[in-house]
Length: 300
Image 1 (cartoon, rainbow, N blue to C red):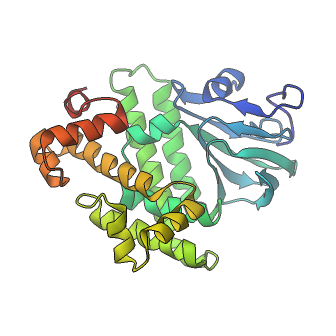
Image 2 (tube, rainbow, N blue to C red; image 1 turned 30 degrees about the vertical axis):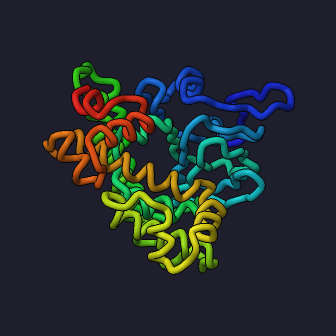
Image 3 (cartoon, rainbow, N blue to C red; image 1 turned 180 degrees about the horizontal axis):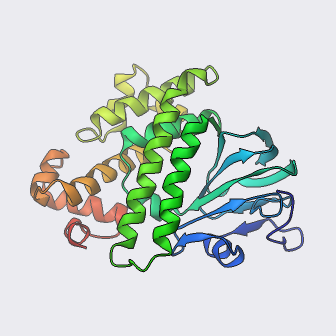
């Protein structure tokens, strides 16, 4: 994993897009500019040597050998049966790797992960695990299961079945995400001990999962945790880099999207279930956060 598949331009940070990866890597499997995955080896590595960032979320599933990967300023050793996650805009560099280093590289856009509508209860274990450590230790069986999904995705991406290709690939990706989420939940007791702000964040995530359909006020969650809204907001921002209000809005929109697509309820009923005073208020809120009206999203 030490070759430089994407030569950096001078001393500028090299930002690698999904589009660039799929065009540069001959063995890449991809869905538009939203999703790409490919086998990695000592000669093929989108994170090789020169610092770069991926324009989207990314992960490496390590199958053999060993490598040291730097994320921002911290180095991590990855060995077989581990997954390392990268947030968008993270500065990544492979410091060194053995000749036997091999695995799979996966990158996907923010719009793709929003579109597949993974619920908070599913994404929460991954969010909380990544926040504490980007390394997830998995079993050999876990790896086989995830790779089996990837191989099926690769087969279908290259088949002549195109009518429902996007829906099939999104469903398969969600299946892989569910597997990883369960593994993250299984491994949570092995993570480092938390500080006060991290405990507040974890408690907030659990409360948000329970109450996001009815409570959108920051002060409600602060009150449940017996702390002031100011301290609560500061703790959430410090731990996650995202405000409590943003977390609440994202959870509400995720619930709204799921209900609009799959519940069979009318928009007025969904507005009521999500504790909006009127359908009009719900419509304005939804459009403000998604750019489209609930009716357009429901029927597109």
